[in-house]
Length: 511
Image (cartoon, rainbow, N blue to C red; front, side):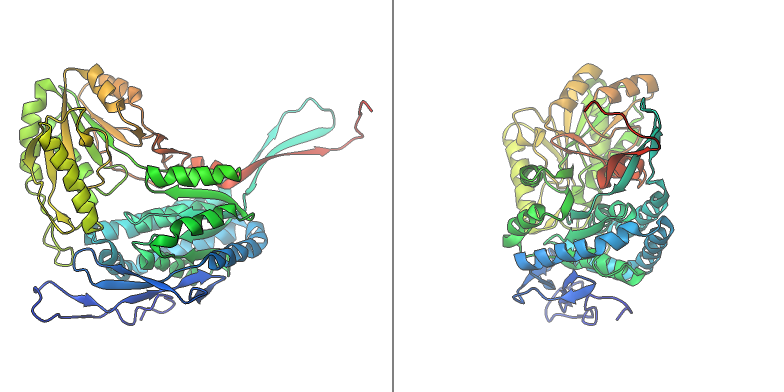
């Protein structure tokens, strides 16, 4: 057992299953409790729920299922801890966040095991999550001394006017399962750096992974109540979230997840006039101009479309190719995609792992079938077995097909052929989403012009749609949400900007 860990890792040994494949193993389920007021807690009614491995079907986590009362206790704990944490010095906050980054790095193998068992992701994706999560913590630590203000010129004699940033209060973070360490850490790191206290609502699909983040922060020395983590049964999610949003101490909400749920979160926040940061769905367009380096475009498109089985908000879903190079690109892309097979990540012999649930694979298969029935051509992949699906690419996708506009969130990319750069921009923008995009072309001025016209919060020229750095302003437009994570842009999301004046002589008033 790891010293300081709060999840019960003492039962994580595997044991062989009779008559099972050589790769199969059963995890004795881990226990993931609530973290409220610095303590491990059962749910008030001692209720639990189970999370199963998407490949084997074995129960890998038994998590506490919070009640509304538990959520209220978490909010109260965060509120009680807020005054002291908000008054702490930047150096103190920085030291704890930096220590958390060190501890997270030291638990890479352990947390990767948990994440693999809950999400079916490959070890490469899991370790990438943990390492980028550490970078996010270090960037947030560096930002503690950037929560600053300014002096504003005023026409009033004897008055000095300031713009000052102060912590907002208790921040509610709702993080997803697909990049649970990256997005779980991101949802709270800058909030903590700015002097806020937090409640992280764990995903029902990876409760132990999210709870492990809490263990790291507790061991780093964060005081009781500064960080609280609650998990809930799937059926209770809306009730818990609505109760937390409505709680008077909660001042900020950030949500990363689907556009459908994001709209619900935003509507609930609007009822209480509370500010949201929303990072939602995407259907990234990858534009290949007729002067593109096709070998580089193929590599970037394959990475962007199929890393983590396409379960990334920035995943390349639409490859928009000019007719002049479409046939050649399709042949090269097909050859690459046919090498990307899915398998049990525990065996580690395939580049792709599983989708998060077998239901996800069935939903993706329905989208593929719809496109094929309407005239698309299958170039590679397309078959699935339970939660496993090989990388899939379809050519000649057109507007009537669901895959043209619906986010698949799976290992599927479609090729859409266009006549010229203007049509490429039109097709790229013919979508409700606007998170990430990419443009490939050797004429940089032309590629930049195309990139500027694409409606997305992020766009990369001659590189993949999937990219992340902690200091960058990360967020989308249209149905991909609003607000920005990352660096200086995030300061506005997690602080209140106040106007303060200091008068040094008697005032003059009309009455």
